[in-house]
Amino acid sequence: MNVLKSYVKRLCISFVAVISQTAFAEEVVKQQNFASKTPANTPASDALMPMLLALLLVVFIIIVVAFVAKKLNLTPNNTGHFKLVSSMSLGGRERIIIIEVQGQQHAIGVTPQNVNHLFSLENPIESKTLPMANSTLVNKINKLFGYTPPQTDANSTQKNG
Image 1 (tube, rainbow, N blue to C red):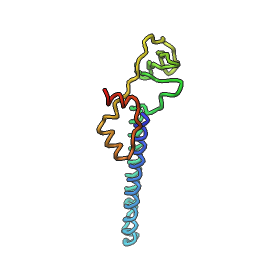
Image 2 (cartoon, helix red, strand yellow):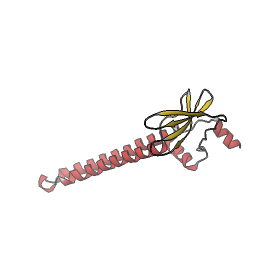
Image 3 (cartoon, rainbow, N blue to C red):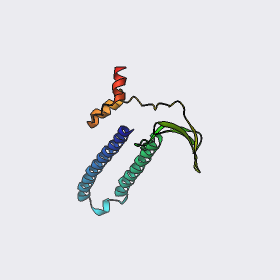
């Protein structure tokens, strides 16, 4: 997930950079055109329309990034002491979460009002890892940004197996 977060951040930063460079180039062209026009020939809507379009584009980008972040759950889940193994939604705001604490897994029910310990698991559930290392899209994005992902045990076992 951290790799995906860095991709989203870099994508947003590069998108904002391209938009700002385009807006700057348009502004230079407008200033050159403005110098050649008389004030009576330039209506106020000529300056207002690009500004409104840029504002709408920025708001749209914020909404899309928020939607993607919410759908992909781009929050850090694992710390040194607690590990989120699995999570399942039961309704609008109710969830069952499997966490691992000191090598033991526990099922926890989470609602907006409270958090309840349901039971301890006898047989631990292994957390699934997404096979992103073999994805052609991820490899192309890595090349584009010049990122080299760290080699982990999961990646080496997938390649060998």
